[in-house]
Length: 118
Image 1: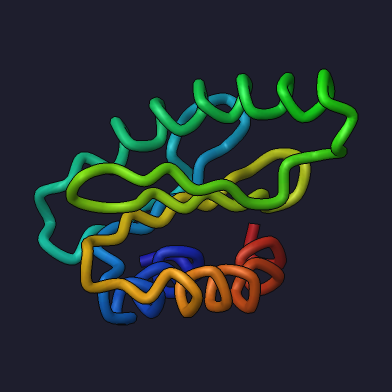
Image 2: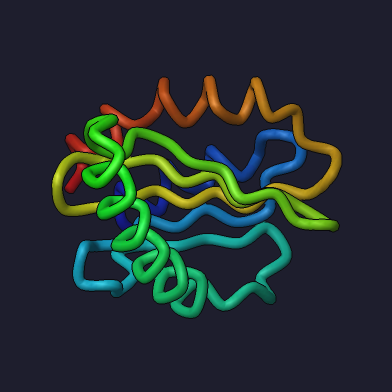
């Protein structure tokens, strides 16, 4: 297991986080782990990549700067995405038991470690 996967394994130990994926700007998963083992992390990576392109353009069009973090809330969960520099993105899929404040804090805290591992 890679150092990035080890870090993602630690992240999914947090209550409510079920999947964590690091996606390259090319849309391919650099690493991904899922608590239940059934989530297709490659598929999550591809979908996040296409959403990232739209979010970047929107930020530019609105003159609000580069994307730092974003959340998509669904009926049964939340996807939190955070920039890992210019060429990667962290995606964390949470269920309804997650404390979103804690998830956002942990993502921000761990982002530098993940970037250093790439």
